[in-house]
Length: 132
Image (cartoon, rainbow, N blue to C red; front, side):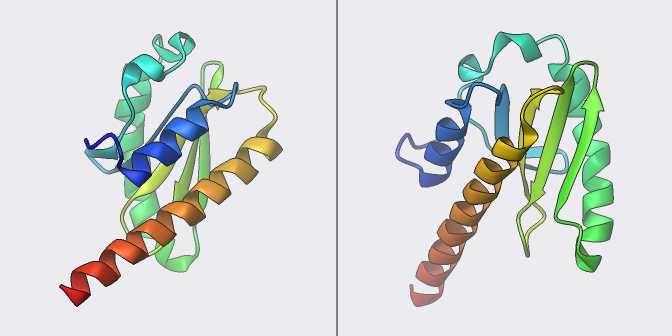
C-alpha cells in the first residue's frame, strides 16, 4: 500500500482518536485498505480473530440490505463494538472497532466524515479512470 494513499491517510487519522482501536475499509472475505496493524490498540488483539470471522458474516447482511437503505450497522463482541459504515454504491464498508462504552456520538460523527471523504476520493478516482 502506497504511503501517500489518501484512503490510508483517512484511516490513520481515525486511529489517532483514543476510542478507535482499529479501523479499515473492508468487504466480504477481503480487506481493501488497512493501516499497519501495529497502529491498532493492543486491547483488541484478544478479539481480533473473532471479529474478522464475524465481519464476513455481517457483510452478507450488508450486501442484502444496502439496496433498501442500510448504511450503518453495529455489533458488540465482549467489551468491543464493531461499527460498519457502508460506502454507498460499493460492497465496501468503513469498519472501526471501539470499546463498548465509548462515546459513540463523537465517533459516529468522525466515521461519517471519514466515509464522506472516502466517497469523494473514490468518485475522483472513478472520474480520472473515465477520462483516461
